[in-house]
Length: 96
Image (cartoon, rainbow, N blue to C red; front, side, top):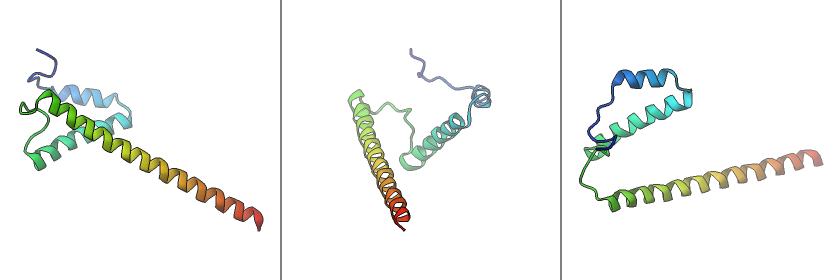
């Protein structure tokens, strides 16, 4: 049996953990809980399920990782474009 098998999490433990956590960690905990709620609303389940094989779980994780790579690349490009725009504006102001 591993630590994830049918183990109920004590709500008081979660409360204790979040009390000692930084705001970013608290935000992540909130996001994880909201993600579970969304999974139940949209798919009728969370990841506590037995109908996926190991390969299917890995495939889902791989696809999510590809999406993450796309989001990161788009954000980097946006930041680079903004930096170029800012540099052009600074040069224009110096020329005046």
